[in-house]
Length: 204
Image 1 (cartoon, rainbow, N blue to C red):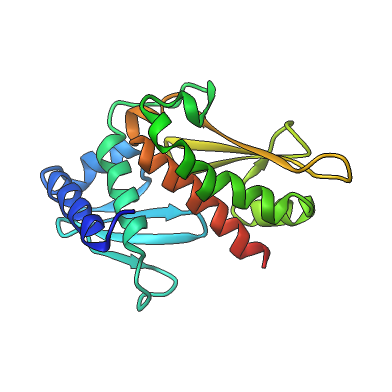
Image 2 (cartoon, rainbow, N blue to C red):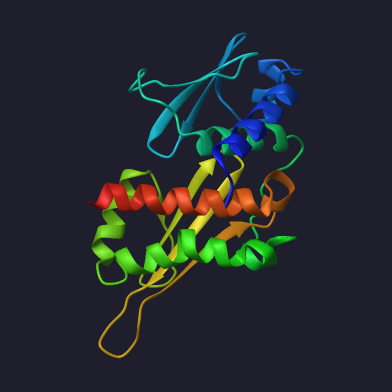
């Protein structure tokens, strides 16, 4: 398991690379709509973060005094760094199909699939309400399916099959096939987990 020092190092490396680009270039490459010479504004799930440039300090616009989790900072900076020249294909793939994802598959299941099944497998309506709060749109899949654009170039689909007396709940999370060009398999697993845990928090 990564330590806080590891996340801090990853954050610093990504920020250093991004500092070589202007906010205009970063915004154009990543699909960010709101930016100025000294900052970027990025919606992330049900938060909106203001990110300074060139220091890349994060601020939650709704709660300026609240600390933005280091894992979220790293993930966002990795997205900003990797999104240039990549566009969604519209072709959905399972996590295992991301190049290099096999090593992280168990972590992906533990962070994302298992909590999705455990919390919402017998309360599909709770998932519908939480997903709607995050701005997800319904898709025709499973007993409840939703598409969520977590980053401008990184959509996800969450699909839940409800449990009953005969069958246990099942779930899947699909990614656009371009995700491996933007995020590492580890980042993709973290992203899916963050989405699910935010849904769980909204359902409580």
